[in-house]
Amino acid sequence: MDDRLSDEERAILLELARRALEDGVNHRPLAPLDLNSLPPRLAEPGATFVTLTKHGELRGCVGALEAYQPLAEDVREHAIAAALQDYRFPPVQPHELAEIEIEISRLTPPVLLEYGSPEELLRRLRPGIDGVVLSEGIRRATFLPQVWEKIPDPAEFLGHLCMKMGADGNYWRYKKLKVFTYQVEEFREPPHS
Image 1 (cartoon, helix red, strand yellow):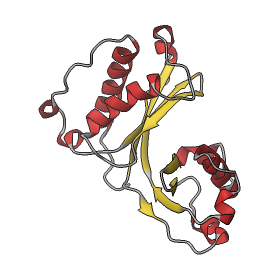
Image 2 (cartoon, rainbow, N blue to C red):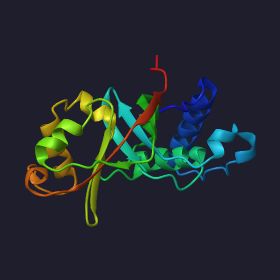
Image 3 (spheres, rainbow, N blue to C red):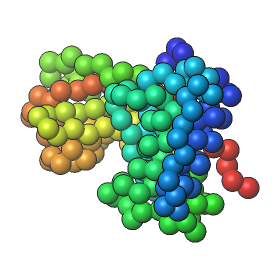
């Protein structure tokens, strides 16, 4: 990603995410966002995933693959959704807020990855660099590039992604799926002391 955010822009997005998370979990209405008061790039369309961790373990992760609203608003929306709407976890409770750490991943637009065979697909993936989207009809699933840290083997990575999509883990080996890749700019809150 060539157009990285400045430290100030990152700090503003993390602060917006933290406030939105606290308001959402405490069932307080979100204050309207004054886009004119923000650095211009934060008011431009952007796509993000917001990941919440608690003691290093995933506690929620929700985002969008395509930009459809201002970057700052996208971060706020996904901070609340990660806390309250990730179907894999119960909603975050107010007493957990002090233990939750926020990570933001700003995405490049997904690009179709052309491949002819399962073997070529494995060769074309770039572990640790690419986020991957598998798509077939209405089914779609993605893993951020950070998931490579936990699943470094490309075949295993695709297997887990097929299962996330609701298919058999070997589905990618015998069914030609649409595959998209993207990169992220990732930043997080400093660890809580």
